[in-house]
Amino acid sequence: MGDRIARLIGAAPGTVVMGDTLSIKVYQALASALEMTPDRRVILSDTGNFPSDLYMAEGLCRTLGGRYRLKTVAPEEVMSAIDDTVAVTLLTEVDYRTGRRHDMADLTRRAHERGALTIWDLAHSAGAFPVDLTGAKADFAVGCTYKYLNSGPGGPAFIYVAPAHQEKTRPALSGWLGHEAPFAFDLGYRPARGIERMRVGTPPVLQLAALEAALDVWDLVDPVDLRAASLRLQDQFIKRIETQTTGLTLATPRSHLMRGSQVSFRHPEGYAIMQALIAEGVIGDFRAPDILRFGITPLYIDEDDIARAAHVLTRIMEYSHWDRPEFKARAKVT
Ligand SMILES: *Cc1c(COP(=O)(O)O)cnc(C)c1O
Image 1: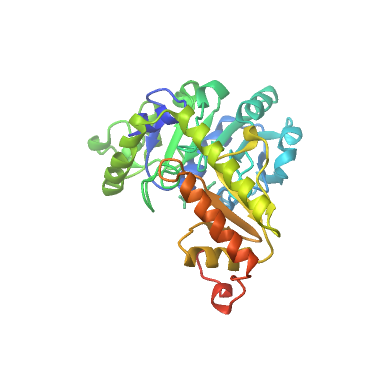
Image 2 (image 1 turned 60 degrees about the horizontal axis):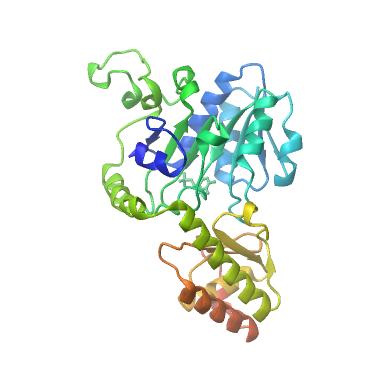
Protein backbone atom coordinates (compact mmCIF):
# COMPACT_ATOMS: atom_id res chain seq x y z
CA MET A 1 0.00 0.00 0.00
CA GLY A 2 2.92 2.32 0.73
CA ASP A 3 4.24 1.76 -2.78
CA ARG A 4 0.85 2.64 -4.27
CA ILE A 5 0.86 5.94 -2.35
CA ALA A 6 4.51 6.49 -3.36
CA ARG A 7 3.52 6.56 -7.03
CA LEU A 8 1.17 9.47 -6.33
CA ILE A 9 3.74 11.60 -4.52
CA GLY A 10 6.80 11.16 -6.70
CA ALA A 11 8.50 8.70 -4.35
CA ALA A 12 10.41 5.52 -5.19
CA PRO A 13 9.13 2.07 -4.18
CA GLY A 14 10.23 1.16 -0.66
CA THR A 15 10.13 4.71 0.72
CA VAL A 16 6.58 4.91 2.14
CA VAL A 17 4.73 2.93 4.82
CA MET A 18 1.18 3.21 6.11
CA GLY A 19 -0.24 3.33 9.60
CA ASP A 20 -1.48 5.38 12.53
CA THR A 21 -2.82 8.90 12.04
CA LEU A 22 -1.14 11.90 10.52
CA SER A 23 -0.48 13.53 13.90
CA ILE A 24 1.50 10.44 14.94
CA LYS A 25 3.43 10.47 11.67
CA VAL A 26 4.36 14.13 12.22
CA TYR A 27 5.74 13.22 15.63
CA GLN A 28 7.70 10.28 14.23
CA ALA A 29 9.25 12.29 11.40
CA LEU A 30 10.12 15.18 13.70
CA ALA A 31 11.72 13.00 16.37
CA SER A 32 13.89 11.29 13.75
CA ALA A 33 14.88 14.53 12.04
CA LEU A 34 15.93 16.13 15.33
CA GLU A 35 18.12 13.16 16.17
CA MET A 36 19.83 13.54 12.80
CA THR A 37 20.69 17.23 13.39
CA PRO A 38 22.01 17.09 16.97
CA ASP A 39 23.73 20.51 16.97
CA ARG A 40 20.63 22.52 16.19
CA ARG A 41 17.72 23.55 18.38
CA VAL A 42 15.04 25.22 16.24
CA ILE A 43 12.01 23.62 14.55
CA LEU A 44 10.78 26.11 11.97
CA SER A 45 7.13 26.14 10.95
CA ASP A 46 4.57 28.72 9.86
CA THR A 47 1.42 30.25 11.27
CA GLY A 48 -0.60 28.70 8.43
CA ASN A 49 0.29 25.17 9.51
CA PHE A 50 -2.44 22.91 10.80
CA PRO A 51 -2.53 23.21 14.60
CA SER A 52 -2.10 19.48 15.23
CA ASP A 53 1.33 19.59 13.57
CA LEU A 54 2.34 22.47 15.83
CA TYR A 55 0.87 20.80 18.91
CA MET A 56 2.80 17.59 18.22
CA ALA A 57 5.99 19.63 17.89
CA GLU A 58 5.26 21.42 21.17
CA GLY A 59 4.69 18.10 22.94
CA LEU A 60 7.91 16.63 21.58
CA CYS A 61 9.88 19.73 22.64
CA ARG A 62 8.52 19.29 26.16
CA THR A 63 9.43 15.59 26.21
CA LEU A 64 12.95 16.49 25.11
CA GLY A 65 13.33 18.65 28.22
CA GLY A 66 12.77 22.07 26.68
CA ARG A 67 16.05 21.98 24.78
CA TYR A 68 14.26 22.62 21.47
CA ARG A 69 12.19 25.57 20.36
CA LEU A 70 9.30 25.69 17.91
CA LYS A 71 9.46 28.90 15.90
CA THR A 72 6.55 29.95 13.67
CA VAL A 73 6.68 32.75 11.11
CA ALA A 74 4.19 33.96 8.49
CA PRO A 75 4.06 31.63 5.46
CA GLU A 76 5.65 34.27 3.21
CA GLU A 77 8.55 34.61 5.63
CA VAL A 78 9.63 30.97 5.86
CA MET A 79 12.28 31.31 3.17
CA SER A 80 14.13 34.14 4.91
CA ALA A 81 13.75 32.49 8.35
CA ILE A 82 15.72 29.38 7.37
CA ASP A 83 19.09 30.08 8.96
CA ASP A 84 21.92 28.11 10.56
CA THR A 85 20.00 27.55 13.81
CA VAL A 86 17.21 25.57 12.14
CA ALA A 87 17.35 21.81 12.64
CA VAL A 88 14.28 21.03 10.59
CA THR A 89 11.47 22.78 8.75
CA LEU A 90 8.01 21.39 9.47
CA LEU A 91 5.72 22.70 6.75
CA THR A 92 2.38 21.74 5.27
CA GLU A 93 2.68 22.27 1.54
CA VAL A 94 -0.86 23.66 1.14
CA ASP A 95 -2.30 25.94 3.82
CA TYR A 96 -5.51 24.33 5.12
CA ARG A 97 -7.24 27.68 5.41
CA THR A 98 -6.18 29.84 2.46
CA GLY A 99 -5.05 27.09 0.09
CA ARG A 100 -1.74 28.92 -0.42
CA ARG A 101 0.93 26.51 -1.61
CA HIS A 102 4.60 26.64 -0.66
CA ASP A 103 7.28 26.04 -3.28
CA MET A 104 8.52 22.69 -1.97
CA ALA A 105 11.60 22.41 -4.19
CA ASP A 106 12.74 25.97 -3.49
CA LEU A 107 12.31 25.79 0.29
CA THR A 108 13.95 22.37 0.44
CA ARG A 109 16.94 23.68 -1.52
CA ARG A 110 17.27 26.61 0.87
CA ALA A 111 16.99 24.34 3.92
CA HIS A 112 19.72 22.06 2.61
CA GLU A 113 21.99 25.05 1.83
CA ARG A 114 21.64 26.03 5.49
CA GLY A 115 22.18 22.50 6.79
CA ALA A 116 18.57 21.88 7.83
CA LEU A 117 16.29 18.92 7.09
CA THR A 118 12.75 19.18 5.76
CA ILE A 119 9.47 17.53 6.70
CA TRP A 120 6.63 18.10 4.23
CA ASP A 121 3.05 17.48 5.29
CA LEU A 122 1.10 16.44 2.19
CA ALA A 123 -2.37 16.33 3.80
CA HIS A 124 -3.77 18.70 1.15
CA SER A 125 -1.40 17.63 -1.64
CA ALA A 126 -1.59 13.84 -2.03
CA GLY A 127 -4.30 13.14 -4.60
CA ALA A 128 -4.84 16.87 -5.15
CA PHE A 129 -2.10 17.49 -7.74
CA PRO A 130 1.16 15.87 -8.92
CA VAL A 131 3.75 15.84 -6.10
CA ASP A 132 7.45 15.18 -6.72
CA LEU A 133 9.22 14.34 -3.45
CA THR A 134 12.21 12.83 -5.25
CA GLY A 135 12.65 15.84 -7.54
CA ALA A 136 12.32 18.25 -4.61
CA LYS A 137 14.85 16.19 -2.58
CA ALA A 138 12.51 16.20 0.43
CA ASP A 139 13.92 14.44 3.51
CA PHE A 140 10.69 13.36 5.21
CA ALA A 141 7.05 13.59 4.21
CA VAL A 142 3.81 12.63 5.91
CA GLY A 143 0.17 12.74 4.95
CA CYS A 144 -3.30 11.38 5.47
CA THR A 145 -5.43 9.39 3.05
CA TYR A 146 -8.90 10.58 3.99
CA LYS A 147 -8.82 13.93 2.19
CA TYR A 148 -8.14 13.81 -1.57
CA LEU A 149 -7.38 10.08 -1.48
CA ASN A 150 -10.89 9.16 -0.30
CA SER A 151 -10.08 6.40 2.21
CA GLY A 152 -12.85 7.58 4.53
CA PRO A 153 -12.65 9.12 8.03
CA GLY A 154 -9.96 7.50 10.16
CA GLY A 155 -8.13 6.10 7.14
CA PRO A 156 -4.44 5.40 7.81
CA ALA A 157 -1.67 7.97 7.38
CA PHE A 158 1.61 7.52 5.52
CA ILE A 159 5.24 8.46 6.10
CA TYR A 160 8.04 8.88 3.57
CA VAL A 161 11.75 8.80 4.37
CA ALA A 162 14.26 9.64 1.61
CA PRO A 163 16.34 6.57 0.65
CA ALA A 164 19.59 8.22 1.77
CA HIS A 165 18.25 8.70 5.32
CA GLN A 166 16.53 5.40 5.88
CA GLU A 167 19.34 3.52 7.58
CA LYS A 168 20.16 6.58 9.75
CA THR A 169 16.62 7.02 10.97
CA ARG A 170 16.05 5.86 14.54
CA PRO A 171 12.33 5.52 15.29
CA ALA A 172 11.20 7.22 18.48
CA LEU A 173 8.01 5.16 18.38
CA SER A 174 9.81 1.85 18.30
CA GLY A 175 6.95 -0.61 18.14
CA TRP A 176 7.17 -4.30 17.47
CA LEU A 177 6.11 -4.11 13.82
CA GLY A 178 9.05 -1.79 13.16
CA HIS A 179 11.40 -4.41 14.64
CA GLU A 180 13.77 -6.33 12.43
CA ALA A 181 12.15 -9.61 13.48
CA PRO A 182 8.77 -8.96 15.17
CA PHE A 183 8.01 -12.64 15.65
CA ALA A 184 11.35 -13.39 17.27
CA PHE A 185 9.92 -11.52 20.30
CA ASP A 186 13.36 -10.32 21.37
CA LEU A 187 13.49 -8.25 24.54
CA GLY A 188 15.56 -5.52 22.86
CA TYR A 189 14.59 -3.33 19.90
CA ARG A 190 16.45 -3.61 16.62
CA PRO A 191 15.05 -1.47 13.78
CA ALA A 192 13.82 -3.20 10.66
CA ARG A 193 15.66 -2.45 7.45
CA GLY A 194 14.73 0.68 5.55
CA ILE A 195 11.30 2.28 5.71
CA GLU A 196 9.75 -0.74 7.49
CA ARG A 197 11.11 0.59 10.76
CA MET A 198 8.59 3.44 10.65
CA ARG A 199 5.80 0.96 11.31
CA VAL A 200 4.65 1.00 14.92
CA GLY A 201 1.92 -1.50 15.82
CA THR A 202 -0.86 -3.50 14.23
CA PRO A 203 -2.12 -1.72 11.11
CA PRO A 204 -5.82 -0.78 10.73
CA VAL A 205 -6.60 -3.61 8.33
CA LEU A 206 -10.25 -2.78 7.67
CA GLN A 207 -9.39 0.83 6.85
CA LEU A 208 -6.50 -0.29 4.65
CA ALA A 209 -9.02 -2.39 2.73
CA ALA A 210 -11.16 0.71 2.18
CA LEU A 211 -8.08 2.64 1.07
CA GLU A 212 -7.11 -0.14 -1.29
CA ALA A 213 -10.46 0.16 -3.04
CA ALA A 214 -10.22 3.97 -3.07
CA LEU A 215 -6.79 3.81 -4.69
CA ASP A 216 -7.97 1.65 -7.59
CA VAL A 217 -9.34 4.72 -9.33
CA TRP A 218 -5.85 6.27 -9.41
CA ASP A 219 -4.65 3.54 -11.76
CA LEU A 220 -6.88 5.23 -14.36
CA VAL A 221 -6.08 8.87 -13.55
CA ASP A 222 -3.36 10.97 -15.13
CA PRO A 223 -2.32 13.42 -12.38
CA VAL A 224 -1.53 16.09 -14.99
CA ASP A 225 -5.08 15.88 -16.38
CA LEU A 226 -6.45 15.95 -12.84
CA ARG A 227 -4.51 19.14 -12.10
CA ALA A 228 -5.73 20.81 -15.27
CA ALA A 229 -9.33 19.92 -14.44
CA SER A 230 -8.95 21.14 -10.86
CA LEU A 231 -7.59 24.54 -11.94
CA ARG A 232 -10.32 24.90 -14.56
CA LEU A 233 -13.02 24.26 -11.96
CA GLN A 234 -11.34 26.53 -9.41
CA ASP A 235 -11.16 29.38 -11.92
CA GLN A 236 -14.78 28.84 -12.91
CA PHE A 237 -15.87 29.01 -9.25
CA ILE A 238 -13.78 32.10 -8.46
CA LYS A 239 -15.01 33.92 -11.55
CA ARG A 240 -18.67 33.18 -10.85
CA ILE A 241 -18.46 34.23 -7.21
CA GLU A 242 -16.52 37.40 -7.94
CA THR A 243 -18.86 38.51 -10.73
CA GLN A 244 -22.17 37.47 -9.15
CA THR A 245 -21.66 38.16 -5.46
CA THR A 246 -20.43 40.90 -3.16
CA GLY A 247 -18.94 40.65 0.33
CA LEU A 248 -16.80 37.55 -0.16
CA THR A 249 -13.05 38.12 -0.40
CA LEU A 250 -10.86 35.56 -2.15
CA ALA A 251 -8.30 34.15 0.31
CA THR A 252 -6.67 31.75 -2.17
CA PRO A 253 -3.77 33.09 -4.27
CA ARG A 254 -4.65 33.92 -7.89
CA SER A 255 -1.45 32.38 -9.21
CA HIS A 256 -1.98 28.76 -10.27
CA LEU A 257 1.52 27.90 -9.05
CA MET A 258 0.57 28.94 -5.52
CA ARG A 259 -2.64 26.91 -5.29
CA GLY A 260 -3.63 23.49 -4.06
CA SER A 261 -7.05 22.08 -4.94
CA GLN A 262 -9.27 24.24 -2.79
CA VAL A 263 -10.80 27.68 -3.08
CA SER A 264 -11.35 29.78 0.05
CA PHE A 265 -13.20 33.01 0.63
CA ARG A 266 -13.28 35.19 3.72
CA HIS A 267 -16.40 36.67 5.29
CA PRO A 268 -17.01 37.74 8.92
CA GLU A 269 -20.20 35.61 8.93
CA GLY A 270 -18.43 32.67 7.26
CA TYR A 271 -19.74 30.14 9.77
CA ALA A 272 -23.43 30.97 9.22
CA ILE A 273 -22.97 31.21 5.45
CA MET A 274 -21.45 27.72 5.35
CA GLN A 275 -24.29 26.29 7.44
CA ALA A 276 -26.80 27.83 5.01
CA LEU A 277 -24.87 26.26 2.11
CA ILE A 278 -24.81 22.85 3.78
CA ALA A 279 -28.57 23.08 4.38
CA GLU A 280 -28.91 23.37 0.59
CA GLY A 281 -26.62 20.42 -0.07
CA VAL A 282 -23.44 22.36 -0.94
CA ILE A 283 -20.95 20.97 1.53
CA GLY A 284 -17.77 22.85 2.37
CA ASP A 285 -15.98 23.69 5.60
CA PHE A 286 -15.70 26.71 7.83
CA ARG A 287 -12.26 27.35 9.27
CA ALA A 288 -11.99 29.91 12.05
CA PRO A 289 -11.91 32.84 12.12
CA ASP A 290 -13.56 33.68 8.81
CA ILE A 291 -12.74 31.14 6.05
CA LEU A 292 -15.24 29.37 3.79
CA ARG A 293 -13.35 26.46 2.22
CA PHE A 294 -14.41 24.59 -0.91
CA GLY A 295 -12.59 21.40 -1.91
CA ILE A 296 -12.38 21.11 -5.70
CA THR A 297 -12.21 17.40 -6.51
CA PRO A 298 -12.55 16.69 -10.25
CA LEU A 299 -12.85 12.95 -9.68
CA TYR A 300 -16.44 13.54 -8.62
CA ILE A 301 -17.24 17.24 -9.17
CA ASP A 302 -17.87 18.78 -12.59
CA GLU A 303 -18.81 22.13 -14.17
CA ASP A 304 -22.49 21.66 -13.35
CA ASP A 305 -21.72 21.13 -9.66
CA ILE A 306 -19.59 24.29 -9.64
CA ALA A 307 -22.30 26.29 -11.39
CA ARG A 308 -24.90 25.05 -8.94
CA ALA A 309 -22.71 25.75 -5.88
CA ALA A 310 -22.00 29.28 -7.14
CA HIS A 311 -25.71 29.84 -7.80
CA VAL A 312 -26.72 28.67 -4.31
CA LEU A 313 -24.00 30.77 -2.65
CA THR A 314 -24.99 33.82 -4.69
CA ARG A 315 -28.62 33.53 -3.58
CA ILE A 316 -27.65 33.00 0.07
CA MET A 317 -25.62 36.21 -0.06
CA GLU A 318 -28.18 38.20 -2.04
CA TYR A 319 -31.07 37.45 0.32
CA SER A 320 -28.98 37.08 3.53
CA HIS A 321 -30.37 33.56 3.97
CA TRP A 322 -27.52 32.88 6.38
CA ASP A 323 -28.89 35.44 8.86
CA ARG A 324 -30.92 33.01 10.95
CA PRO A 325 -30.33 31.76 14.51
CA GLU A 326 -30.11 28.09 13.47
CA PHE A 327 -27.18 28.84 11.15
CA LYS A 328 -25.32 30.74 13.86
CA ALA A 329 -25.37 28.07 16.60
CA ARG A 330 -21.83 26.71 16.55
CA ALA A 331 -21.45 22.94 16.25
CA LYS A 332 -18.37 21.14 17.60
CA VAL A 333 -17.22 20.17 14.13
CA THR A 334 -17.09 22.99 11.59
C1 LIG B 1 -6.04 16.96 8.32
C2 LIG B 1 -4.70 17.30 8.86
C3 LIG B 1 -4.20 16.67 10.03
C4 LIG B 1 -5.05 15.72 10.82
O1 LIG B 1 -4.30 14.79 11.52
P1 LIG B 1 -4.96 13.41 12.03
O2 LIG B 1 -3.99 12.89 13.01
O3 LIG B 1 -5.13 12.54 10.83
O4 LIG B 1 -6.29 13.75 12.63
C5 LIG B 1 -2.91 16.97 10.43
N1 LIG B 1 -2.14 17.85 9.75
C6 LIG B 1 -2.60 18.49 8.65
C7 LIG B 1 -1.72 19.47 7.93
C8 LIG B 1 -3.89 18.25 8.19
O5 LIG B 1 -4.37 18.91 7.13
